[in-house]
Image (cartoon, rainbow, N blue to C red; front, top):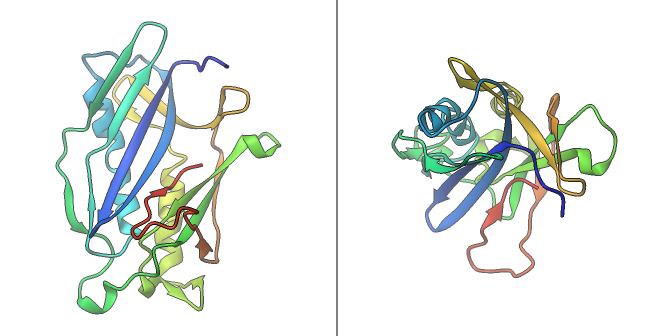
Length: 207
């Protein structure tokens, strides 16, 4: 089993009624160092990304604080960002925009590195898609800028003064990380069915 280099794994959790969704993203530190003293500050710097996730989802959706774990040869840190839960967020200011597509439907954002091969790229599935952002199973002119903003944020280096965290893709096959250089929003709505077919499927967004 390959041993992963030092990295930060962050998890975003969302909830709409009884349905739940989660997303894991990885970062490596390219400047400075993550320590017990600044760990929560680093998570707080990454925390605004959950608002961009929430912007792509239908209201009412709750977004929980970012969970993080940093692993290196000398550190094993776990914690959550200190910012509060975003309650009743998501797209929509009146009841007409609260409707979402069926739970098995999702928008896909593709993550690309500068290397070839399936293990060098990944996907993020976004559930709770507002009907107001889709026409005939395709993202409309209102929705595309919102999803693109999230994609752009996923390739940005984040952090605090003296500590820069670069988003990377995990190559599970080889146990290596590669910089994400490009994201692409798939125009058509995709199906993300759970083979167990529970009444309320739980989505794992990042593959």
